[in-house]
Amino acid sequence: MPNQNSNWPVIGGIAAALGAGLCCVGPFLLISLGISGAWISNLTQFEPYRPLFIVAVLILFGWAGWQVHRPIEQCEPGSACAIPQTRRRRQIIFWTAMLLATLFVVSPYWIPLIAE
Image (cartoon, rainbow, N blue to C red; front, side, top):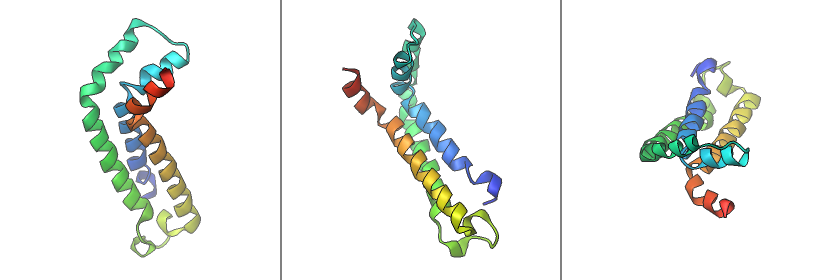
């Protein structure tokens, strides 16, 4: 995969995770920051699309995981995945983004515990 396109699966996965958590984590974050208003309740309208966002997260992070953790033998010489330092940095970014995405996807389960 060319260098300029290698981050798109992770970026897309985070965006999909934000979409999956928008109904729950969005209002929580806004209220935590002191932002309020009746319009915040409109964010719950994204709840029916949550399963689609979760599927997108799984697909995009599956693709990104394959790109980041594939065997070095499959990398073209001189490409970013063939350079050990770059490969390791991308693996760290991948797992950090995966953790963040997981927090957004499971937000309906942990936010009520904090909000009480």
